[in-house]
Image (cartoon, rainbow, N blue to C red; front, side, top):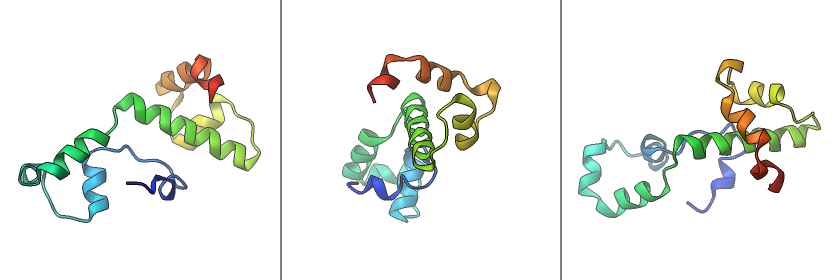
Length: 103
């Protein structure tokens, strides 16, 4: 899907099989994907891991904070992505990583 930016203005959702089947507006079950091998291969190639999703949603939150002119801090990021402090290990790791400073 070339138009990802259309979906990034709203809070990101994890790109898994359910997400893509919803976008396709098909009433397919996962077992029916076996009948559509090219579709199944495409979806399997673009679904993301939990870690990839968490990095993407954190980056989205940072972009939103910049657009709103707010401070980029852990508390504001957690509010935007709807994660509690006890589940914030990925946010802390991302903010402390070299990757954060490169992007």
